[in-house]
Amino acid sequence: MDGLLLDTEKFYTEVQETILARYNKTFDWSLKAKMMGKKAIEAARVFVEETGIGNSLSAEDFLVEREAMLQNMFPTSELMPGASRLIKHLYGHGIPICVATGSHKRHFELKTQRHGEVFSLMHHIVLGDDPEVKQGKPSPDIFLAAAKRFEGGPVDPQNILVFEDAPSGVHAAKNAGLSVVMVPDPRLDCSHHNAADQILKSLMDFNPVDWGLPPFQSNAS
Image (cartoon, rainbow, N blue to C red; front, side, top):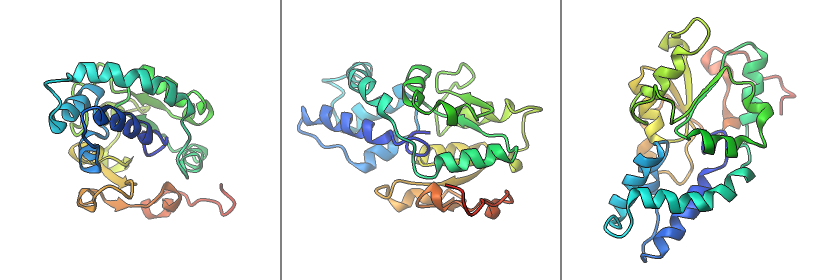
């Protein structure tokens, strides 16, 4: 969801750069790639360990400090280009869709509060603090849980297409036996593209026909 449907990854980057500046360290995309898509506490452990600040700031304290800043940012979240078009297209053609995100409930509500219409079209939403999701991405837990909750589920993995922007999310989907379209940030090293079945620069570039889905109408926006 973050960085794919909602333009929220920039908030995490800004906050983490601010925190690291206190330790005269910088936040780069090699570290961000390791954190994206993970549960909050898992990403926090990566952050403090990889940056070497673990002796000064615990993962738990990092989350508390980060939370105070993110709370004000999340309600300003904007949809990513092509997100609304794709969701409304699939819903309009009776193709069940869901969200499987590492975000916990409180953050999800803040991030989506201006986009209720779009997210109401989801058949279901699986969050990072869902009791069935024991491990975050790249574990397949969240996608296996999501596949089971469709009507008549679990759905055959061959009939599921996942959209991801995060390397850990791509690997989680592949570990669940699912096909993946990756829409990575252009700053992400291309070595992280290898596991995906298709790479796109934007959801605006997605062609449903490539995956046996109904085509977009020419006037869709």
